[in-house]
Image (cartoon, rainbow, N blue to C red; front, side, top):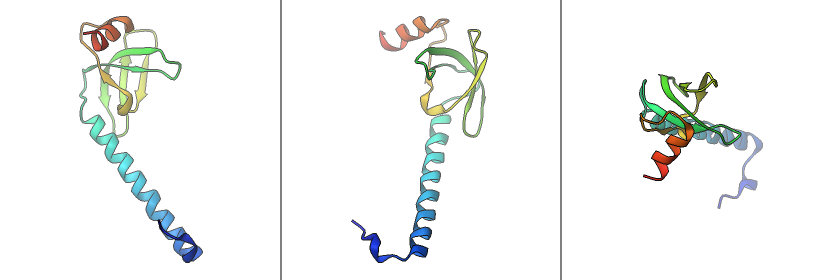
Length: 104
């Protein structure tokens, strides 16, 4: 373990800056890897904050998010690719997607 008491405040501030930059770079890398698994037109699903399964298709792969048009009146969403899963093309309802992804 590093003994931080040996560092000056200036050194600690510089170390903090480097750590924050590294965390940001790793998160960006993880997002890019996750987004690379999808392309426009893919049928996908994800869970909303309320736990509802949302189905749709990818309209656009953005730098940090996926733009998803839904099959329901939910409209479109911009979602982090880390929480999105591929859904079968036959799934038109959340129940269909859940059954196809987890029961088959």
